[in-house]
Length: 252
Figure 1: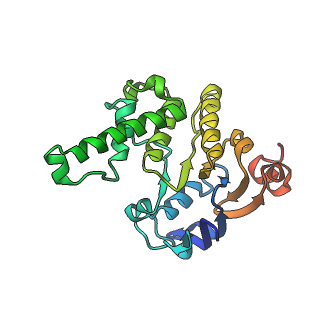
Figure 2: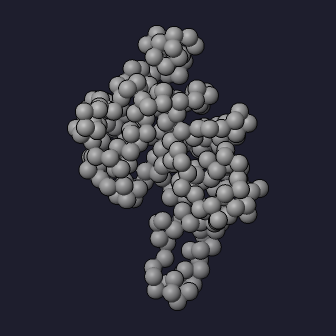
Figure 3: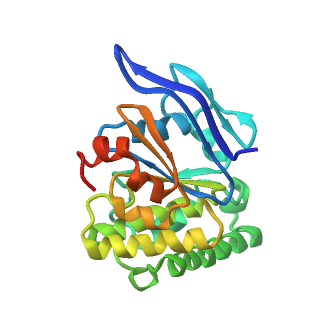
């Protein structure tokens, strides 16, 4: 059984079809790329999976369950976390505070425990603080722990978005353009962080158009104008005539 699967997934906005009859699958422990040029329908795919958009037709399955009609908060509770192209960070919060705030999206204490400052509440807050520091250390952000998020370089802000997603303890992590707008140094830093997650056995689906991501992917699905044009290995993608013509303009 696949961890994530779609069958005949289609999305139309009026007369415009942005996702057309897509069959897709992702296995547990796999890191897979969902690639295509800008405007190909990649972010629409994430929005369909996470319940932001409802499909025009087709189905979405997660861990064997049909989640086609699930709302975003329901999808999140199932263990699907995501990042965004435009990071919804708290600019006036520190890096550490941004991550602890994400932990609180899944309440660890009851209202009475918080109100009366109980021992359980204090223990939960200690656990959250410890876990947040572990995530920052894991992703290489510990040295900017006390910096305001708004003052971070673009690449660090992107990785902070990943840290916030990890704080929700996802079983499946969706990364939306994790290398978007980065310079080469920032891209290398981000690829290293994603590689660490891969080595931990996390299941990751990456939407990206930057080809640097290929080196850390297990498999690739390529779309163009909402239509799947390739599925296979990164090596096979580089040699596929349709991908070369559509994605690279006839040259690699």
